[in-house]
Image (tube, rainbow, N blue to C red; front, side, top):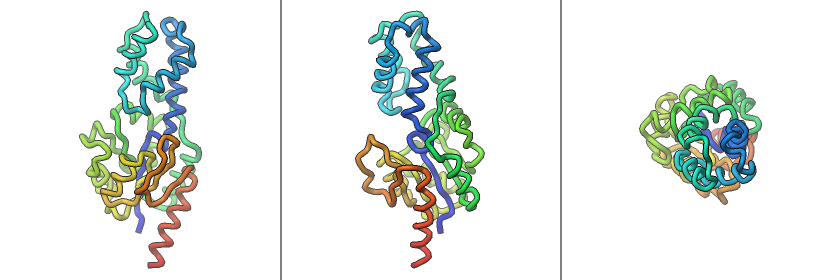
Length: 227
């Protein structure tokens, strides 16, 4: 029986690629007195490149940008603080997010969220999306002292939801951190496709859009019923 669905945040519920570009655009405007000499497109493209899909923390990103673009009139620490305090203003959800969470809640499915990152930043992003209230349990790696792909964080999340890993589905975009790791914890894994990755060979199912998840869930239930 499937009793819980757990999600990754960045790249799964939060369209981080669009959000990041939107934030950098906004920051370029806000800090025009020190960034205005840099063509906006060049600043956005270089930021995204240095960010490496979120796997490089922004202290290193801003220090590199300072050097490359000769930024004056602000310190990298000030720009970093602007990122931490303002990124949530740029958050873009993937289509059909709220509709999906409402449908799962109506089906009395327990909902959880597991994300790597800094607690304050990730919680502000979750709140900006308006989805905090749908989740019975939210685990952020900094707060938990565990980080994906450590499969223990998935087991902790299932325990807090009061379900067994075998009764849970995890949905994420990273083939190793989300798909492989959740399966190692005993969950079924759904890969939300991302153009950066070619495939996720360990996935139990693949979706392009969040709206497809209900169909996958029903298919799993049908398979279980036929056994």
